[in-house]
Image 1: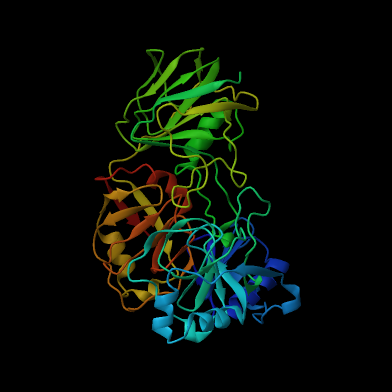
Image 2: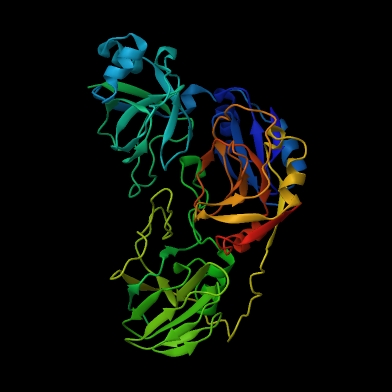
Length: 202
Length: 284
């Protein structure tokens, strides 16, 4: 763990693995350090914004170093089942790139449990880790102008469900009718950091 | 006091803004809200509103609105000529408005963003508890267009008992204070010295998301890609070409370019008022 200054009101904790980010995020969410006002996990980092009137970078760093980065116990984390129809527009390209049949792709994708590592790119867009390395593929050379809401996609080490229609460069392998994000719902998200996810073929 | 406000002309670009959606970054939702938060707060205080009421953020003036009822308004931020039913009105002061009056904001001589507050606040439906338009995430009401009708709410406080709250004008070459960013080690050792060594020009590729700057090129020591990491307003993110982008209100929640330095939050209101073509300096 290494803590870096991020301006005068935030610290960025560098970690080696996504599980450590989740572990530290869970530990800090349960027992926030004095003066911490927001925690934002990402791929290998956790941003901690703080109130300068209540703490300092040095004091916060001292408190952060005392926390565990061990992964949070699984049973403590919610599970969301996402029903999927594996009919994505890029299935043929993914099959060609991996040498798998389309049914193998569905089986490999649905055969694992995932964890939301972090959200970003767009509101409610959750990066899920745990993807079979065979399905680790680069983004499309040309991003689509519009990916529909509910598209299930892969890129790099992640899989995701597009929370709303948006431009996007991920490889589309299926779609779900489940609304993973709805601004009129409270809370709006189903897939927050640390949530476990299973894809169920339909 | 409640009534409606009709947009006759929005000017080059106008949105509804309040203090935004803090605390949701872990869900991929940025804070957004007024680019110049101090001016939003002042506009609200002048008309006896809570500081977080929704107002109109006008870019380079040109805004014209008509009121259906009696109202009290105030214009802050970039100082511009104001006409109320054809009569001159003062910026940074409460102005009474009668039914049918048109309020017009001319283009400001200095600065970029002006704020029009109305007593009671603009009462469009909130999205995730805020009425701000996040132009990057596409949250909140659409940008104003001719014919948009905005309801006026009834969230008020006592009047402040102030007739005028003058503010310093925006300098020709504003100085923005920076502190080190988390990825200074991705750059050569002289990167911060280079950053402060010469003025940067604000390019036309600037908006509520960020300001693309043109100045001395910052050189990388490390190449390769940075996994996405959380960003804050004021972050100076540096793409490989070496020219920084200063993140403003609608910045992405996570970014993949290294952040060399961060502009102090107290200076971001000023940064939000710098026009394309103007120059800024950074100071450590």
